[in-house]
Image (tube, rainbow, N blue to C red):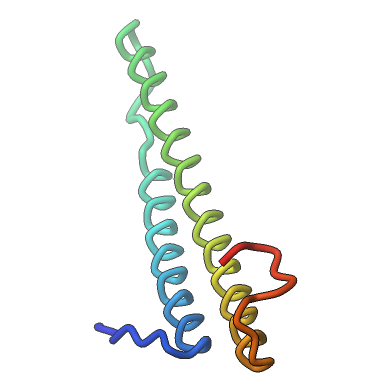
Length: 106
């Protein structure tokens, strides 16, 4: 599905950010499912098996940490965009040239 990016209104900016956040969450969910499927077959029978289990643990932990970080980052970006869009709307409604009392620089 293709969406034309129209960002001349705050609601359109927020909607576009929402679509990106939803897509990021879907990818994170699929990655989490794939990581959960990385399980060894059988037990470790030799030193090489034990070493490979260590590598598998590192891979799954690293990937799980990355998906959590990506999920947190996309949610934080969405929150910032919503706040910024509302701050710009307020400034526009009051005929200001700058955004006052905003927690973030825009």
